[in-house]
Image (cartoon, rainbow, N blue to C red; front, side, top):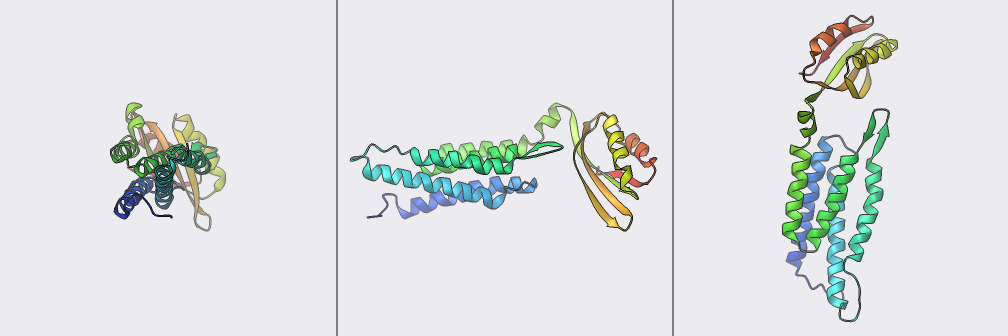
Length: 223
């Protein structure tokens, strides 16, 4: 009882492939400062792979005396991934973040299931497409729309000027994606704006305009 039909070597191979798939996918997400990163994707991939292996083993052992469905257990995994994916989606004043990460978790689970079933070509090919989507297509939409992103760094001596900076940036048809305020010293703050703008826009003109605002000590952007 409990003896597996698959060889130990094949089981270990499947689990190692699941670790590699989940690890590389999660590493890209972690580099993008997402909450669900390296370890999360590995665990999802391993769990999905284990479930598929168990489902196949049970089907091979008891298919002659039972009408069990070998896809039933993995189907429950995909249902459960919904809860994990929803935890990766965040809504804030700048919009919704984490949709790509949630989709990546779901795709990683699907790939883990495919590897668990022994569908190596399907699993690896799907994983390569996922990595292409995450790495190569990451800025594809910006290329098509001729928009790019950069970080504006404002050094100020009063927080009251923040709204003025906001309005000045937005009046230039620049989208503010995120921002953070950092206290540098007593009476000095730095505000980092992640902005998206048209490539044709001359940021130097905007910088000069922002520097002319009272309480703005310095204004620069990452080139």
